[in-house]
Each structure stands twice: as C-alpha cells, then as structure tokens.
Length: 501
Image (cartoon, rainbow, N blue to C red):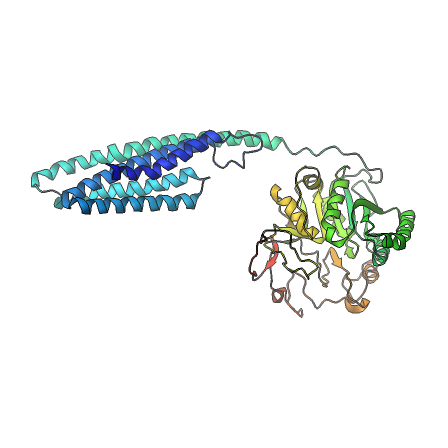
C-alpha cells in the first residue's frame, strides 16, 4: 500500500503548488494583466488536471501491480512497481521544468495524456488470452473492457475538458474587458510648461547636442552652427525647433578659467548653450544625458532629438519624416544594436566594468536618436532607481528595457568613417587631416546647397554598417558584425560572455 501511494506524490506536489499559487495571485488589475501569465482561475483548472493525473496514476499502478503479483513473485513485483514509480516521477519532473510555473495547465494536461495512453494500452493489451488461466474468463474481461474505458477514462476526461473549456472562455472574456479598459487608459503625459522659445506647431522638436568644456568643442560648436544647422528649417505651422548644446559643470578650476570666458562669449552671442548641474567628464556621460532628459521633461514638446557636436545632421530630411509621422507614442529611432556584450577592458575608453550582465538590452548609437515625448517621460519622469553605465547609448537601452520599448533600426546614422548619400547622420570625428575623409562639414553643406550628392568628394570606399557592400573596399562582416534589417547590428561571432561579480 505504501509503495502504491508513492505514485501520488507528483500529483500531490502539483496540487499543493496550484492551491498556494491560486490563493496568492491577484486577479487581473490595471498593472498586472500582462505580468500575471497564470491567474487563480488557471491554477484552479490546473488543480483538476492534477487530480485527474493522480487518479489515472493510481489506477495504472494498482492494475499493473495486480498483474505482476499474479505472474511474478512479490520481490519481482515490488521491483517493477518501484521502477514504474521512478519513471512516473522522472516524467513529471521533466515536464514541470520544461513548462515552468506559468503554464500549469499545459504541464498537467501533458502528464494526463501520458497516463491516458498508458491506461489505454494497459486495458487493450490485458484483454489478451494469455493473461487468463481459464477460457471461460475471457468473455467477461472483453465485455467489461469497454465499460472500463468509459468509467475510468472517458467520463473523467470529458468532465475536466468541459470545465477547462468554459473556464478558458471566461478567462478570455475577462482579459478582453480588462484590456479594453487599459487601452482607454493611455499613459497621460504630464502637462509641462510651454517653453517660450519653442513655437507652437503640429510637431514640436527639442534638440540636444552633446558637447564639452574643451577648446576643441568650442570649435566644433562653431562649425556645427555654420554648417549642419543651416539645413534646419525655419519654424512653421508644421514643425518648430528648440536646440541647445548640452554642457555639464566645468571639470576643474583650470578649465573654468581658460575655456569659461569662451563659453560665456558663446552664450552671449548665440544663447544656445545649456549648462546642467552635472559632471562634464567623459566617464559621466550617461549622467549628463540623463540630466538633459530631466530638464526636457518639464516642458511641452513632441520629439526629443539627441546628437553630438561632430555629427552632420540632415535636418531637412529628418524634419520631413517627423512631420509625416506626426505626434506619436513609444517612438525610438536610431542605429540599433542588439545582443551586444560589454567590453571588459579597462584600457578601452568604452570599456564597461560596472554593468554586471553578459549582454546589453537593445540600444541605439549615441550619434543621433529620436524619442517621442512619452518615452522621455518614462526615462526621466517615472521615479525609481537608475543604473548608470559608462556609455550613454547603452544606458538608454537599459533605462527603456523594463518598458518593452524597442528601437526602430535606421542604418542612415553611422558612427564610423563612412559616407552614404542617404545618410541622416554623418560622423566628423578626429581623423587627423581634414582630407582623411575627403572634406569637412563645410564641404558637405556646399554639396547640398549646390545640388550635388551629399557624399561627392568624400571617402566612399568604406561600406556603411548594414549597407550593401558591392563595389566597396570592405564588408562589415569582416569586422565581426552581422545585421538584421529590423533588429539592427549584432556580432557575427559572439566572444565568451562574462558576468561581473
């Protein structure tokens, strides 16, 4: 008797787990409809399948034990019984780990299916004459075997299946009603104050250009104003802009005394520099960008565009696309990266020794990305803990990952030294001589103003990331990169993944 009871242990554990989870989980509410994959009703239905599995397990074990005792000695029958019990436990444990805690019905339905097949085979095979010692006993088992099917298998299964069906229909109805309520309760963006320098229009854009407290950055801002900003359309009823160069606090007194007067003169001449109460050091770049998010979140606008002071932005193209898109939600566009591991090298300027996980969430290149107003609020307006890693582009991916917002991949933004005629963000970094890339921002502006292709005279032998490389001098796969048209850039061959302790 004790050995037979062992066959009920998996079903008993499952019943206990479903009862405890059914009593601890709340019904659908305004925050948990997509988090609670298994509701109390689901666990109650799974409890019925547990009971059915236990019942069929007991029937199978009892019947087989009787057969074995009839044909074998007690010791041999006990060995077979223990073997059957171990197989029962093993299958139950495997299916429990396979389906996990959030799919209890599927788990116990599968276990029941195994017991159903086993019982059907047992009933069918045991009608063979070799199991009976007297020929007159053969007719009665054959007569009873159909009634056994109905009584032991068909009736219990029918009851549980019908209860599962009606419970599932009820659950779907509940989800539809609740999801309709949630659909109406769109995230309300806080009514910020209107910025006097951002004109009213159909699409209002705040532009933040990351810069720094260095003499080189002073020159970069000058070039930025005299070149790419010339492409920014004038404010109209369709689109309006407010832009600022973003600086933190001076890193030290020497920098403040030498570069400070130059920045003060810029502020007096152009009034386009925003000094934020944060560090301006390169290793604190993420904190400076987050400070820009916080500053922007207090105002009304429709799009947040972040770029750098060495990026040539096609404001004409970007403006047309934002006008076409209109005001939208959950919008995040940029050169997307996914499944990218941190660089665990302290000597690399982009080395990441703080982020503990082996893979970053999807993120966009910091050269240029565009966010809708609600996304900015999710970053800076929704209070909670914030992780800060070294690179601000990867940090944006970390901040947005909990909200399940994925970037729209746009290959027209490039951080490497390439030039493609449809680009909307061209990097002009420190490449030594000006002709190293074929020209300057002034040359690119001159191309556009005189009807030439954007990249006329520029270095075009290098293939841009995710662009076709036919006729180019290289292929980005040679750099161990792969590209998905929707997801973006990833590594062709992953290195050994590491976790920070």
